[in-house]
Each structure stands twice: as C-alpha cells, then as structure tokens.
Image (tube, rainbow, N blue to C red; front, top):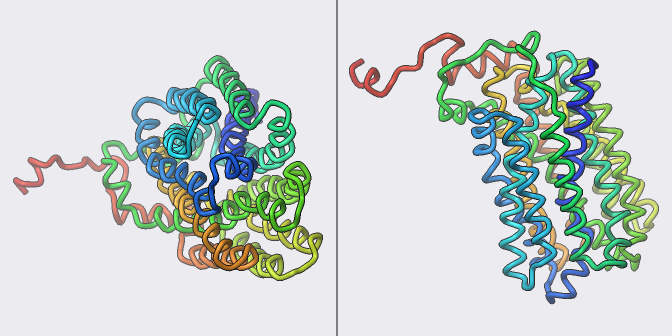
Length: 416
C-alpha cells in the first residue's frame, strides 16, 4: 500500500474500532443495566434493537449525504455525533430515556458506514480495495475482543455510566485525527466503473441486485449480532460466570472473527469478487457448528463450536461487499453500499429481541439453534447474485441508464 492508503486504513480502522466498542458496550453490561432498571430479557434486547432501528433507517440517507456533501465531511459528522450520544447513554435516568438516547446514537452511527466505504473507494485502486477494507473491518472483531475484556473491569471501578463517558472521549480523539490527517482522494480510482452521472437516487434504490446483496448480509449479520448480543448474558446467567470471565471467553471467537475478516478480504481480491467460492463452503460449516453449539452440554465444546461458526461466517463478510464495491461508479458508492449495509442492520434490529423472547420462553440453546437460519439465507443468496463486475453491471443497467445516457426530466417524459 502507498502511504496515503496506509494512513486511510489506520484512521478508518480507528473510527470503526471505536464505533464498534461504543455499539457493543451496552451488550456487555446488559445484566447490570437490567438489574438497575428491572428489565426482562425482552426489554434488554429492545435496548440493542432500538439502536438498529435508527441505524438501519439512516443507512441510505447516510449514503446520500456522503454522495452529496463529501465522504470525509459526513464521516466526521457521524464520529462527533455518536460520541456525544455515547456520553449521554451514561446519563440516562430511566429505561425510556435510555431507549431515546440509544435511538439517537443509532441514527448518528447509521450515516457512518457508507461514508466510510466511500472514503476508502476514493483513495484506493480496485485491486487493493478489498484487502484494505478487510483490514479496516477486522477492527469490528478486535473491538469485540476489547470491549468484553475492558468494559466489565472498567465498569466495576467507575460504574457502567462513566465507562460510556470515557468511551465517548476516545471517540472525540478519533474525530480530531480523521479531520486533521485523512489524505486527499485520488483523482480517479484505477479501473473503476464509468461514471453514471445524472442517475437519480430513486433509480439506484430500484436496483434489485443490490437488495439481493443486502439480504445476503442480513443472513450473515443475524448470526454475528445474535451471538454478540446474548453470549455474555448466556455465560453470566446460564453458566454462572462473572461478566469479566465471560469477556475473556468471548475474546476467543472474536479473535477468530478478526482473522476470518482479514482472510476474507484477501480471498475477495484473489478471486476478483466471485463470492460464491468463499460463502458456500464457509456457511456450510457455520450452520452445523451453530446447531452443535446449542446442544453440547460442555462449556468448552460450546465455545469451540461457536468459535468455528464465527470464523466461518467472518470469512464471508468481505466477499459479500466485493462485487458491489469493485463495480459501482464512485459517485454511487455511498447509496449503493448503504443498500447492502441496510440488510445487516435490519438483522441487528430484529434478531436480538427475537432471541431474547425465545430465551425467556424456551431456552438460550433454542435461541442459538434458530441462528442457523442465517448462514442458510446467505448461502442461498450467494447463488442468486452476480459473481463479477461484468454480470453485476449488466444487472444494474437493467434498472438504470448506462454511463453518459441523459436522464429525462419530468417535462421531457410527459412530452414523449
């Protein structure tokens, strides 16, 4: 990588890392918050899912903002805003106030992913893009290691409220670094798709193939968010471990997820998209591993199976994005990537409370077994989506005009 690309990767890695820590910290301390506010598991799951309601709703508007006002500007807006709401999480005095703050927090974070992806696309060539994105997105898995290890002892010393305030301070520091040191964009990413100037956003939203990639990400995110939300509570309430001990155990599958994300990015570049080559074998391992995790009585066996499932699923994250990010015109990356990310956030919105209800009504084991549907959805959609830029572009042009084709105004349409 060139020096500007390395700097971009480091800064976006830091932004995604604190994004993810701020997001999952609440799952780590859910038992404590549940005790303080007298919440059942369904209500605790709602604290997680209300974030995803706002997060999902703001994905596409975030992409539109990035395409209109610039990716760096929107990335900085998001960083500063979600840091403020992270601090306000620690000041909430009731369950309803906490819900409102987490909703606002989700809206602030929701405009970030597509802006971040556009920042990277503007500063990389096609050949290095997915490897760089894999490095950046490995931050999510590493944050999943850091948060369970750091937040419980920090909360034990200063309280769960102050732990959110301190995390917000780190977010402000990252905001300053991105604002000051993010390199300027390349003039034109090498090998990028031709510009699709004049294409209205509504035409992009009608591209069915992008929604298929979105549904593919839904299946992946159902697995990852289901486990990351409820594993700490499961180990604490069902296995009798302290939150600190649970955090140590959660670090094992999280490290596997980081490795899987990195490897998935490299495989995406090597296979030039062709996500089916990674997703089908990987999800064929993840689904049965989840089922085994749900039925094994041994804690060690459950952790091993869960780690295998998470590693296999994480191999698929970057391949899901490979073809869209390699193929979309630069000025459509914001909205296009937001459509794909939207599916993952819908999973985060729906799955945690559903699993919480299943855990209360039946058991945690039954809830985890239901997650095996996620890998099945992703594998099926991998068979129904384009595998390379040529087939993706053909599918896209069925819904929108090729580059250089003028888009008729409403007056022209009426006269014709």
